[in-house]
Length: 116
Image (spheres, rainbow, N blue to C red):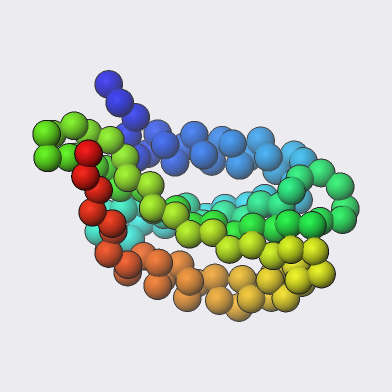
């Protein structure tokens, strides 16, 4: 039996919870959108240490998928934004002010058509 959407999200959340022990930027939220896709909104940095050179915000949509031959899987559609070095403070302000808008806009995008 393959992995389902809830298992895939649970695995990523476990990874993020472990990462929180070495990355004070690591946090996440889970949403369910209009097409019953789950979205995971999360932030990471390069990890341990006070000085950061990279901070990343991601949003992933997880959707159950079935191809034309009835093979099942998970479609993962993601968006990442990064801030680097001296630009991290501006990046963090942008994410704080616009995260909900970015997540909402992303949830409304048509999913790509995947062929196999």
